[in-house]
Image (cartoon, rainbow, N blue to C red; front, side, top):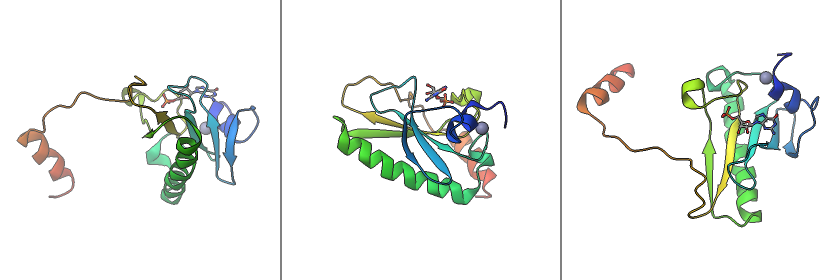
Length: 134
Ligand code: 5GP
Ligand code: ZN
């Protein structure tokens, strides 16, 4: 994808604060961090979202989230970590190249990764179970 900024960052055409790199991924610091150490796991091969990602690479990406996340939490003054991954505009995705956010957290930091809990209705439950033939 010649016009994709994360393709250019992931492949080193645009410089970035890189925490980790291998053949498939680059992990960088987010330029608009929710907290100190907010990082992004970027695949080097373009995929717009989770649905386009090869499943074996999704497994690797999640393993990386564990490894890099653990290092961040041990190295920073923080005691928690949000692993966030947005797909589609309605879900908050603004850069359409798959990425996983690693957001270090501390109690009362107001970093704001949350939602308002609703109620699981019987109608909704049956509708979603039906998608899976249950
Ligand atoms: P999304 O909203 O798509 O889940 O997340 C996009 C993230 O990419 C945002 O947190 C934003 O701050 C970050 N971002 C956007 N452009 C750049 C950039 O050029 N460099 C870096 N390091 N982060 C970026
Ligand atoms: Zn891309």
